[in-house]
Length: 158
Image (cartoon, rainbow, N blue to C red):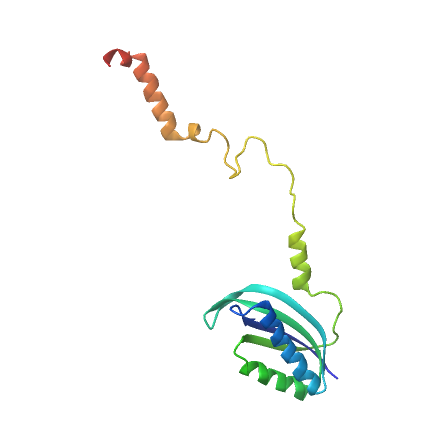
């Protein structure tokens, strides 16, 4: 049988359990039509590139399918009828790999980025240098004006 990969984007208002229920429904439909789901990955709630039906985020699910073509056509028809599914895309592939997809492997790389080295000395958390205000032009002018008043006996007038 031919192999396919299907990515399903479900609405963000549903829970992860409800998104898994959509994938379970797909699995049950395929098994009744003579196919099987060989790989299943939940990519999480991710931001969409553009708004789809007033949604900015969606639950992404990847399914690796081993099914005949009519079963995949019926699967796609069922997904278009499901209100919780925003978009889906099915592509034919040569083989289904057992290793995690690129999306999941990249997500694990982001979590390992922790410590990046010591902070440079003499800087605040925001990156500004200490004493930043003293070097600005308006502060220098103010300090020069005060120095001029002190030289001419400004305190004697008060």
